[in-house]
Each structure stands twice: as structure tokens, then as C-alpha cells.
Length: 248
Image (cartoon, rainbow, N blue to C red; front, side, top):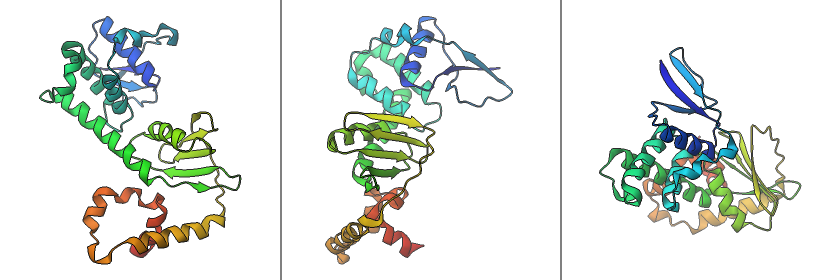
């Protein structure tokens, strides 16, 4: 049987589970969130670790960079990311903060690579994300990222657009971030119906005209542009809609 330890899909609960497994000298072969669909050969183990136990505090991670790397891997779309985090932490116990420089270890190198990929995608979306105004004056933006970076984007726009009401909608995960001028709240499985007003059409056309005008035709380099602006983001970028229509 394939023993699979379950957690409640939150980062804090995953850390608590890791702390519990290490305290009890358990080396898991698999860790999954409780939405996992098991096969006939899987043995699911639910420890029901109470939240008030705060086992994650026993991890004693004082370096915020270590915790940041683990959190970014948690946000990734990587298979077996929980095990990757677990064994990265074991290496942290052995080498302390030096582990961040030990790319000769396959586990560490893989962890840092995934964390960087998540960070890079979040950074790109901070520039590619486009808000549109709803009929109730709320700003709305739609994204479909590879990784679950909506919390990272929300932290950014909480500071950037502090005086506005806004929504960021991850349609791939059916997850939405709602900001009320004080803080943002993540809501899962939200059946959201959006009514976009066409009063912004004129501004969108002006923006597209500006984008086309500042481009230098003789210096156009599609390969270079795809490196900085991957095509998977185009359909949610206003200025790229005309180009999508031309290529379709």
C-alpha cells in the first residue's frame, strides 16, 4: 500500500504536519491535500492535527528567506510539492541557512528552481494584469496563471491600489481575491457573474493605439517579445487582443 499523509490544503497545516512527522521520526513517501483522489493501492492517513497546537512553530525557522522559498513552492503547480518542501526542510535542519547556497544537492536545487519560477510568474503578472471597471466602479482583472500566485498579486495591489475596490479572478482555479480598501480576502469556488461596462471601450482603444504607435516596426522582434510576454498571458492583456484577432 502507498501511504499518503493528508493535510487541509493550507500552508500552515502543511508545516504543522511536517513538524509532527519529524517529531515522530516519520519519513513519508507521499503527502497530499485532502482533495486528493486516491487509487485502490493508496492508504490515506489523516492525523487531524488541531490548529491550536501550532506545531509549525516547532520548525524554528528564523530566516524569512527559508520560509519564503517553502511558501513559493507551496504555491506552485508542481507535482509532489509537499514532499519537495519536506525534504528541503530536512536539509535545512542539517545545514541551517547555508542550505540556500547548496545547489549541488538535487533536492535543494529543485526547490530553489521551483520557487524562482513562481516568483518570476508573479513578477510578470504584476505588469501584465489589466483591470477593467465594472458598473459598480469596482476594478476587475482576470488571470489564468500556471501557479497559484493570486495571494502574491493581492499583496502587491493592496499597496498599489489601496484607495480602490478591486477583484482579481483566477479563472483557472475558480479563486477570487476581493479587496475592500482595507484588506483582501480569498474566496474559493465562487460562481461570479461579471458585467463589464463598455464605457471604457474608448480608453481601451486609445491604449491600444498608443501601444501600436510607440512600436518601431523595423525593430520588431517577436521571439524577444515572447520571452518577456509569453503568449499564454495574451488573451487577458488589452493591447494584445487585436493581435490575437489577427492571428485567429
